[in-house]
Image (cartoon, rainbow, N blue to C red):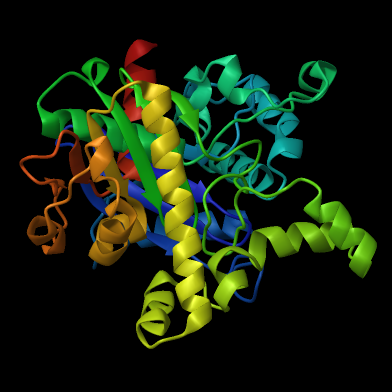
Length: 381
């Protein structure tokens, strides 16, 4: 049973191939520069992808007919699409209806689905939604304090993102803790260029930091995170910036990049260690925002069994993990600095033996989670 997982962007197609009988990754790659130069469109990109799969050097598959299903990452399922689903024309239409909620992502995801359906007409296509894990949030967590008709008419609410990552590490944390998923209360931190936190009670998300879009919440590489809603109006009045200008500023020129001119956490740390005052301030803001969310989610959960770090920064930066946890010993988060300093690609504990809350580093694998969701959908048909 071979599953191809596709993540289609506006100018790229990232893919992974899994043998689901052995539950192992066969290979993967990316097709870049679609619409630029040699790769004219996504159809040509998928043809290149098939060529890569058949390439004698990588030996991923001997024949495209070996592919049993294609899983697609779709950023936004809105309220109409929560669970992974086999794609048909009606599902395509619902994904298209959610384009206003994710105008930068859903059109590309949809284009990948349509192209794959044309090129693999006999193969089931399954859409897995980045918002799905957060659909268990109660109204008190997802409603904005705006006129209610805006929720009813426009579905304006908090949705959350990075759902496949939070779902995957939740399952892995329960396995590491040797208990059922339904028995654990977790705070999961996906820290990369984009960053989000989730509060997970009994295996289900009850709150998350991102909102209607991925802009809300934590300080990120280029996104500002939580912001006074009046700031965009102030910018428009004082500078003449258009809504499009402000949107680009908040999403692409803010966060760490806005504070110190550098979005890459490794560079920010190097500059801070070299005495750069702006990099120092940027890291303090970044860490403080995370600490506030950890405190808030500890209160919301009413007790935490484990805290999980994942994502590029969360998995690889022992220094950032240490700075985030410094001063949180009073809520049971006590780091073992020796364990934390060990570089490893394996899921592992890094808390001190005397700590009340288990602290874990768990490498995420969103593509594997999507492949498993594909199998669940197909087995239930």
